[in-house]
Image (cartoon, rainbow, N blue to C red; front, side, top):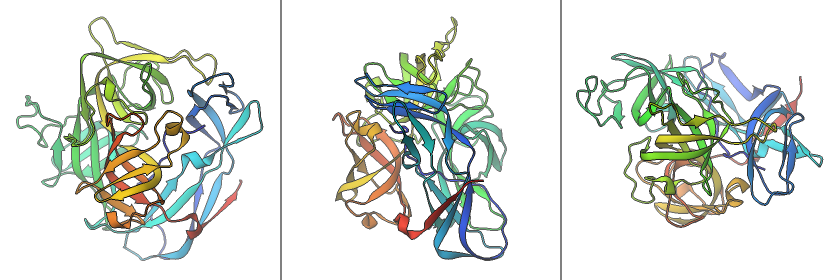
Length: 429
């Protein structure tokens, strides 16, 4: 039983606090969470309302739970060393939430799921580019764009994010010249209503500024017919779980956590959010789908109507998948955790993946790094990696041609300190 992805969660909110030395941070959680998880053959789980019974099954199935109780409403994380906050000087606090480690099951037939938040908190360091934090993968709908700023409604949070734009902002995936895009891949190309993927940095200044480093168009993806999801099966029919819905989507009854059988229209467009030409691995056809890929899907809507059918929500938690025919699909970065197996600079291999991958025949991946790879947390460069240690990786999962060992174009590596570096105390309120 695993969520499709174990992720490192970054909150980019800003808060004013009094100057002084701080020994810890208190985190507050809601009373219940919604989770979509893979349930292995022979397992049976409930959130107290919805059941997912795979006792007699022979393969992993995907189930949604809407009311998984949160075991603790607050966590107090004690820093190994106090963090000193100086008036007028921004600092960053990075909170890593381990989805896999947080999900617990107790009892039998069916076991009851609960969510006990497991976190690692670190103080972020100012990067070589002068930023406190770099955000590489915000996807959403353009709400406003002028000469100096762009505002995007984040599909994951439905909240607006405004970032400065200028001569240092690159534009990619706007290759077609149109009336509003006189010169390809320039700042005149993105328009209100477009679904874009933005990278931006949070400045080390007071007041804090968000500065966009890139705006990547998403060829063929529209705010009305698009959704974001994770590939959770590739055979016999590809399946995708919805993880976010762009502002402006008009597809009837689409929602986060739903499962869809994925088909492709003739001539469907395959692309990636960075406009990258990959040297290892491919993403160019339905055969290149890999378990765990994060994607943007655009539903085909010819004159006869959109080729989209919502899931049938009965029985609860085990809805019959809906169906969606895509005329465009774009690859987004995926976050994965695992242990480095072998190191051969600038590349490495990873194993020790969670059962979402291993129970579906993926035992590891082959990663490539380069000038496009950034490092954060306890690692600052490739030579900091140690075989046998577990890290968090962000990048593009690609078909390598070898089943069970996809390629991975690695854009970021995050090293979390050992849990012993801080103590977590839980309380209920």
